[in-house]
Image (cartoon, rainbow, N blue to C red; front, side, top):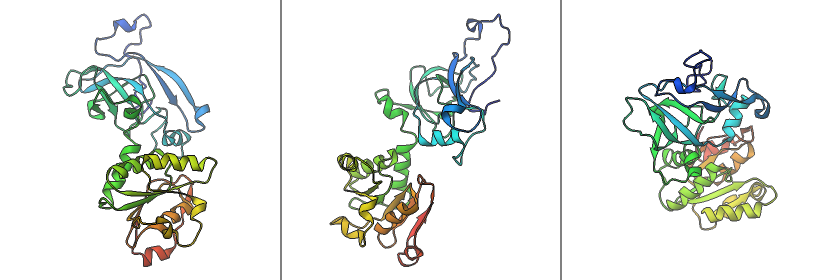
Length: 297
């Protein structure tokens, strides 16, 4: 059996002579889904399968999925290396956008044709039709571009929460982050720009760094540095007229986390929300003792 939220279910009727047309009126259409039965490389453990119709309970909604992204965390869950993962077998995908196809008899807030996004922390969006409780769907404006709606639940909200939940940032303040080319990083840059907050951004050394710097600058970044450019003493001299950052965001770990801390002002805070390098956070004890800093994991 799949987990409760994956909705790979048995048919309502086992009679081979019964066609889909003979099912009760309030049932979902047959659905095509991407499922994995075990953890491992996505190209070997995933499979495409057909899910039979299922009855739509009174508080449930059937949504025809329009788009669902493939996030790095989705891949990590399939591989079995992500700390939070559902029991297998399970339908993949943790966010997406769809159109309401039909609703249960007790559903009042949603109607067929509504554009809805999926609660970000339950699996099952990699299928053509999803049936879940009405509380797991959020109605959005129909004019929202599909590619934006499909990807709004995870990365942009992560960026927003980190800018609001840890430090009371004001216009004119500064933040510093590594992993600036990630979707979260790009969202941080744009949200900071519209709020009048400066951003200092750290990227990896790789071909095309100049083009990446230009792209991030157009999004609103004040400063963009490669990791090698920060292998100098007195990195704060690189800030120019920008105030020292009050908040640092770390999604890489390893030495990249140290680079974030080096920029922080006295009493600054670093929030860690990822570990893409798969290396421990290496920060000198000096920064904790003599800079009165705060590290939030």
